[in-house]
Amino acid sequence: LSGHAGLFSNLYDMSILTQIMLNDGTYEDVKFWSKNVQDLFLTPYPYDPTFGLGWRLNRNKSLSWFGLHASDDAYGHTGWTGTCTVIDPKYSMAITLLTNKRHTPCINGTFDGEKYETGKYGKIMTLVYESMLLHKDPPKKL
Image (cartoon, rainbow, N blue to C red):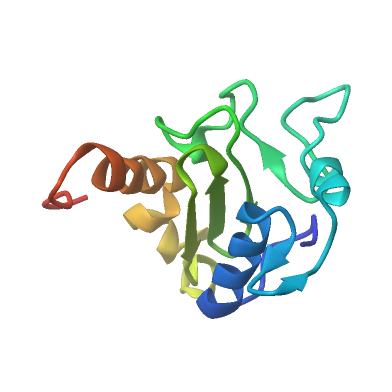
């Protein structure tokens, strides 16, 4: 993961990466990194506990894009292009949102993709958590 303008990938590869993270560095029978390295990724930065190594951490619930229901153990990454990934070990769950928000027409200095609900990461994450954890049926509309 890079800390610059976004996360460039596809859903298949992201599902593997998020599963590796949920499995402490392992996918199927392959060990990509040790538990110690995994712990290093998720160790809060001393001056801002919302930063890990390559990941943002939901330690103090100050990042709205995690939504309302992410656990304190959740971590993730966003990108300027319209991407958001939340991994929540408490629920053995990963959510990846890949959009082309920034590849829409720019009207009066604002990307047209900004007006769509998919650009409101926290709202989307909240709806996914509610659908997966609180309700039997998905929400009717955004």
